[in-house]
Image 1 (cartoon, rainbow, N blue to C red):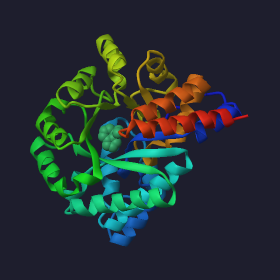
Image 2: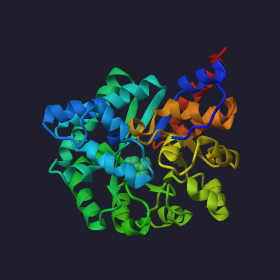
Image 3: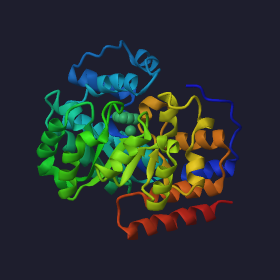
Image 4: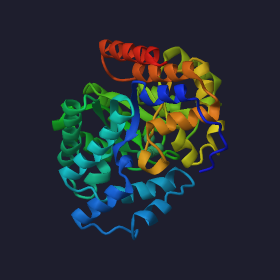
Length: 347
Ligand code: HPA
Ligand code: ZN
């Protein structure tokens, strides 16, 4: 990663960023699998990996684009077989997120990555959900699940996946769309998203990460997306910027991911501050923290160093992260109050 020379943050701003109550709305749980856990699960499940040890796996995290990352990400996920594996992975993430001030996470998971290897969807959802429940009762962090369809596969496969997940509908808050973006426009998944929305699920979609602004329009119009994941390519289209400002459809931005996957050469080129100043609802997320060099607070801190952002920006981003969550307004008001109280408590 080409991280430019940046100046250190003042202590007060760093304390604010690290401790402020915030949500995380763009986290692929399979992307939170650290190399150490990958190797531990490989041993437990007798899976052979194409890497000799943790260090050689980490050394392969040198991506040139989204696809080069996805190839390794799917290899890493191949160690997940039993409910306990999904539990361990999710618990590790939630513990870490809680320690970083995250009060609520909407967690993406990719069932097709597992069902195509013979793992039942019940194994996936029950393992992840059990960790979410345990984290709520023991740590207080809340969470919800978003089931993503892999866009490099066809829509019939997504429809089949939705059908298989019907018994677990009460564990899901929404559906999403991820994997290889270029060549797989949102319109390809219009029917499955219509069906999911008719079942009462929220719709989100990755769009405008590597793909064009037209894919963001497609996610809004064809899929009824209520949030756009990444969405940074909206800067190419003034009309779209005006629409996102008017509707406040949020963009779940992932700064370190964008640099690691070569969308930008370094964080000083990142448009998030520009988007925030234009009045769009944007916030910071980690995407695949085990692969992209940091969890949510690493993303906030590196970004603030690179873009010379201030306390008002920090509060605005955290407030957007709360506004964009799929929770009742009463809950948002509670967290916004906690955010303000935390800010005022700083000396
Ligand atoms: N983009 C698309 N698909 C993904 C990503 C991403 O950043 N991470 C995991 N699946
Ligand atoms: Zn993502």
